[in-house]
Length: 414
Ligand SMILES: [Mg+2]
Image (cartoon, rainbow, N blue to C red):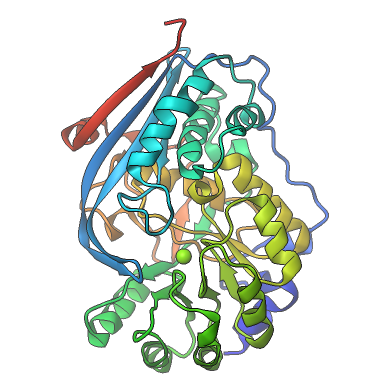
């Protein structure tokens, strides 16, 4: 059991060959090879399309924020030179995980980001990021457009997303995130089921009243699995004694136990807990990641492209953590296959050495918006596609049949 702690000590979590081979921590001084900044011919984007699509969930998903039974997917596509690039805005309908919502993202894209993107040719990812920089916040809205742009760029170069951003893995290890269940028995049944599917790590959502005893029982039944918990900000530092009990269960990490914009109390909690703290909600960009690591607020970072503002910021956080030997992994936001394909590409980078929340499409949806769907292998991995761009076909018929709204923003030259 102590293997998990051994893996994480001094950032050497990557030496467990059964988990995955991750050269990141042995090669910290290497620069990540990435041609992304290079765009020889600036791209004139001709059109931005925003589309919302409602997909029913296979089963309700409950976190400490509440429960949902369908997902309003927000897709963005951009067009240039006869090609289309696809991205996804991961904001939810309600401002619970983040202040952003589908409604705020639509407003910010329509009135600010898309006009800025359409106003002049874009000379690469860094240029696009600079184009958005004067607009404060709204990272998920920015990310949706960055994702679409990077897909477009990859298609134009006939490269996969992974190739374009400097990914090094042919397959990425994945874990499952299990929501709060009505009963412990139902949770235990789900743990069994997803372990049987091959998932390499089980993450339990926790909240006050659904934490220590639940974790104790899962750990008792599964003494050797990689097990972690995610509180989604449900505790305060006043709960530190209670949270310290979680040190008894040899958890891979405890994710975001305290407030969404806190670093100070997390540093205090980390100083008295042996379990590594992983920050999710608190890491809104590279500057926050740097502060969190300098303050000792966490030992692991969950990178979500949407939360941090797109590839430009996600790559910067990855590179920072990689240089410091800090493990990162790719979180999930109940994305459709389009967001999921971007997550797979991101998780193919060298520093993503812990299993990501990149489930099979069927984990959440009866049918996905891409073909083929994302599948998890029997040994708990997802293959990184090699085709151009996303590496999956877009199922436009299925998207159209579930579309709730569609809006287009045209460039001036059209
Ligand atoms: Mg989380």
